[in-house]
Length: 164
Image (tube, rainbow, N blue to C red; front, side, top):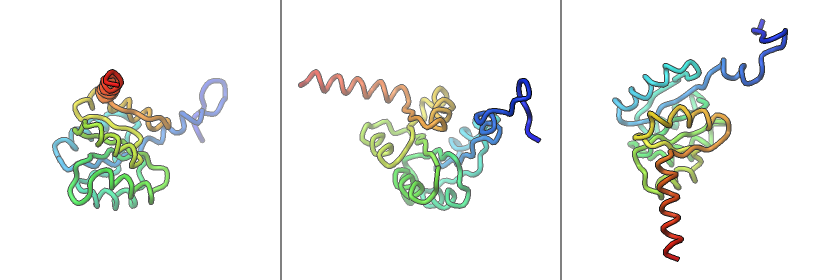
Protein backbone atom coordinates (compact mmCIF):
# COMPACT_ATOMS: atom_id res chain seq x y z
CA UNK A 1 0.00 0.00 0.00
CA UNK A 2 1.01 3.66 -0.28
CA UNK A 3 3.17 5.22 2.37
CA UNK A 4 1.23 7.25 4.90
CA UNK A 5 2.31 10.55 6.34
CA UNK A 6 1.33 12.22 9.57
CA UNK A 7 -1.57 10.78 11.56
CA UNK A 8 -2.92 8.22 9.13
CA UNK A 9 -3.39 10.76 6.33
CA UNK A 10 -2.64 9.63 2.77
CA UNK A 11 0.27 11.38 1.02
CA UNK A 12 -0.60 14.59 -0.74
CA UNK A 13 -0.83 14.76 -4.51
CA UNK A 14 2.43 16.74 -4.61
CA UNK A 15 4.26 13.97 -2.77
CA UNK A 16 2.80 11.35 -5.07
CA UNK A 17 3.92 13.28 -8.16
CA UNK A 18 7.37 13.93 -6.72
CA UNK A 19 7.89 10.25 -6.00
CA UNK A 20 7.26 9.40 -9.66
CA UNK A 21 9.85 11.88 -10.90
CA UNK A 22 10.20 14.06 -13.95
CA UNK A 23 10.90 12.18 -17.16
CA UNK A 24 13.41 14.26 -19.14
CA UNK A 25 14.63 14.10 -22.73
CA UNK A 26 17.88 16.02 -23.31
CA UNK A 27 18.44 17.38 -26.83
CA UNK A 28 21.78 19.00 -27.70
CA UNK A 29 24.21 18.34 -30.54
CA UNK A 30 27.29 19.01 -28.40
CA UNK A 31 27.92 15.66 -26.67
CA UNK A 32 30.22 16.93 -23.86
CA UNK A 33 27.64 19.56 -22.86
CA UNK A 34 24.79 17.04 -23.04
CA UNK A 35 26.77 14.64 -20.84
CA UNK A 36 27.48 17.38 -18.31
CA UNK A 37 23.79 18.31 -18.08
CA UNK A 38 22.77 14.67 -17.69
CA UNK A 39 25.43 14.04 -15.02
CA UNK A 40 24.08 16.95 -12.99
CA UNK A 41 20.42 16.04 -13.41
CA UNK A 42 20.86 12.41 -12.35
CA UNK A 43 22.03 13.69 -8.95
CA UNK A 44 18.48 14.92 -8.35
CA UNK A 45 16.24 12.00 -7.32
CA UNK A 46 13.24 13.66 -9.00
CA UNK A 47 14.90 13.67 -12.43
CA UNK A 48 14.79 10.61 -14.66
CA UNK A 49 16.66 10.90 -17.96
CA UNK A 50 14.63 8.91 -20.48
CA UNK A 51 16.73 9.79 -23.52
CA UNK A 52 19.42 11.89 -25.13
CA UNK A 53 19.59 12.92 -28.78
CA UNK A 54 21.75 15.24 -30.88
CA UNK A 55 19.52 16.02 -33.87
CA UNK A 56 16.26 17.89 -34.36
CA UNK A 57 14.43 15.17 -36.28
CA UNK A 58 15.68 12.56 -33.81
CA UNK A 59 14.26 14.74 -31.03
CA UNK A 60 10.80 14.78 -32.61
CA UNK A 61 10.89 10.99 -32.99
CA UNK A 62 12.26 10.40 -29.47
CA UNK A 63 9.62 12.67 -27.93
CA UNK A 64 6.85 10.70 -29.64
CA UNK A 65 8.33 7.33 -28.53
CA UNK A 66 9.38 8.27 -24.99
CA UNK A 67 6.62 10.77 -24.07
CA UNK A 68 8.79 12.74 -21.61
CA UNK A 69 7.37 15.23 -19.14
CA UNK A 70 10.07 17.74 -20.05
CA UNK A 71 12.42 18.31 -22.97
CA UNK A 72 15.63 20.27 -22.46
CA UNK A 73 16.13 21.64 -25.95
CA UNK A 74 18.96 23.50 -27.65
CA UNK A 75 18.21 25.99 -30.44
CA UNK A 76 21.01 25.15 -32.88
CA UNK A 77 20.54 21.53 -33.97
CA UNK A 78 21.27 19.57 -37.14
CA UNK A 79 18.35 18.84 -39.53
CA UNK A 80 15.79 21.20 -37.91
CA UNK A 81 16.30 23.85 -35.24
CA UNK A 82 14.96 23.77 -31.71
CA UNK A 83 12.04 26.10 -32.34
CA UNK A 84 10.77 23.83 -35.12
CA UNK A 85 11.29 20.79 -32.86
CA UNK A 86 9.17 22.51 -30.21
CA UNK A 87 6.35 23.23 -32.67
CA UNK A 88 6.28 19.65 -33.95
CA UNK A 89 6.53 18.02 -30.55
CA UNK A 90 3.86 20.21 -28.96
CA UNK A 91 1.52 19.37 -31.84
CA UNK A 92 1.92 15.62 -31.28
CA UNK A 93 2.93 14.90 -27.67
CA UNK A 94 0.34 15.69 -25.03
CA UNK A 95 1.38 17.43 -21.82
CA UNK A 96 5.09 17.79 -22.59
CA UNK A 97 6.86 20.93 -21.40
CA UNK A 98 9.83 22.44 -23.20
CA UNK A 99 12.74 24.25 -21.61
CA UNK A 100 15.16 25.78 -24.06
CA UNK A 101 18.77 25.49 -22.90
CA UNK A 102 20.89 27.51 -25.29
CA UNK A 103 23.87 29.80 -25.70
CA UNK A 104 21.81 32.16 -27.86
CA UNK A 105 20.85 35.26 -25.92
CA UNK A 106 19.55 37.46 -28.75
CA UNK A 107 16.09 38.78 -27.91
CA UNK A 108 14.55 37.72 -31.23
CA UNK A 109 15.72 34.12 -30.77
CA UNK A 110 14.43 33.96 -27.19
CA UNK A 111 11.07 35.42 -28.27
CA UNK A 112 10.82 32.96 -31.18
CA UNK A 113 11.57 30.04 -28.83
CA UNK A 114 8.87 31.09 -26.38
CA UNK A 115 6.44 31.84 -29.22
CA UNK A 116 7.04 28.30 -30.54
CA UNK A 117 5.63 27.02 -27.27
CA UNK A 118 8.67 26.94 -25.01
CA UNK A 119 7.84 27.12 -21.32
CA UNK A 120 11.19 28.59 -20.42
CA UNK A 121 14.62 29.64 -21.61
CA UNK A 122 17.90 29.12 -19.78
CA UNK A 123 21.23 30.39 -21.03
CA UNK A 124 23.90 27.71 -21.00
CA UNK A 125 26.17 30.17 -19.18
CA UNK A 126 23.54 30.40 -16.41
CA UNK A 127 22.63 26.71 -16.25
CA UNK A 128 24.56 26.10 -13.03
CA UNK A 129 22.44 28.71 -11.27
CA UNK A 130 19.16 28.47 -13.17
CA UNK A 131 18.53 24.97 -14.50
CA UNK A 132 17.01 23.22 -11.48
CA UNK A 133 14.95 26.27 -10.53
CA UNK A 134 13.71 26.51 -14.11
CA UNK A 135 12.70 22.84 -14.17
CA UNK A 136 10.84 23.23 -10.89
CA UNK A 137 8.96 26.34 -12.05
CA UNK A 138 8.08 24.90 -15.43
CA UNK A 139 6.78 21.69 -13.91
CA UNK A 140 4.56 23.86 -11.68
CA UNK A 141 3.06 25.43 -14.80
CA UNK A 142 5.03 28.66 -14.63
CA UNK A 143 7.43 30.25 -17.13
CA UNK A 144 11.13 30.75 -16.49
CA UNK A 145 13.67 32.96 -18.25
CA UNK A 146 17.31 33.18 -17.14
CA UNK A 147 17.93 36.16 -14.90
CA UNK A 148 20.56 37.59 -17.28
CA UNK A 149 18.04 37.58 -20.13
CA UNK A 150 15.36 39.16 -17.96
CA UNK A 151 17.79 41.88 -16.85
CA UNK A 152 18.95 42.57 -20.42
CA UNK A 153 15.35 42.68 -21.59
CA UNK A 154 14.44 45.26 -18.93
CA UNK A 155 17.53 47.32 -19.82
CA UNK A 156 16.67 47.24 -23.52
CA UNK A 157 13.04 48.16 -22.82
CA UNK A 158 14.11 51.04 -20.55
CA UNK A 159 16.56 52.30 -23.18
CA UNK A 160 13.86 52.11 -25.86
CA UNK A 161 11.43 54.07 -23.69
CA UNK A 162 14.08 56.70 -22.95
CA UNK A 163 14.51 57.28 -26.71
CA UNK A 164 10.80 57.96 -27.09
